[in-house]
Length: 166
Image 1: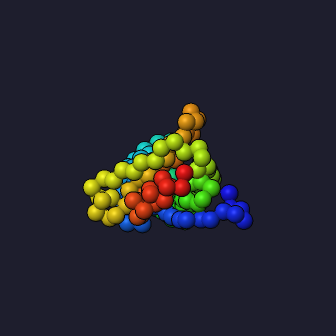
Image 2: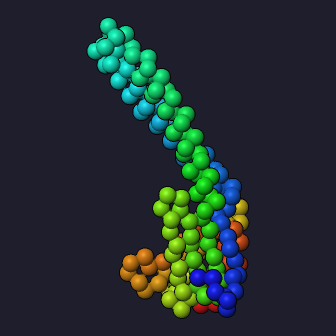
Image 3: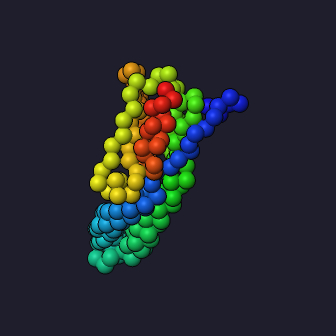
């Protein structure tokens, strides 16, 4: 989308504080689920393996492998979250609005300014306190008929920029 005649007004990411807070919340619950599922599964499988091959004692190799998987999966989830933050951004230019990002599945969605039918923004109480919000841009298209710019700082300024240039 970046051509010689294009003027980029904003290149923004979501609000850093909200991203970190949501990520910590999600990683916490992911960790709890991982500990419960893999921990219980490892204990169960090592018990069965021990019953079959180890005279009724826990099979420690299987148990240790399961206990090794728990922190490994949590670290992978944290790295994925960091990479996701680095990869995702929004571009507002005189040609259109673009949402780019993804780690394993990359995406790039662009709406040309002349296709935009409506622009609105919403702010939760926390977003109001932090000065950010969600901008909803919609078109007449039935498939992928819009973009939501989540947790954008300076939401009113960016909203007005998009609205005034369409």
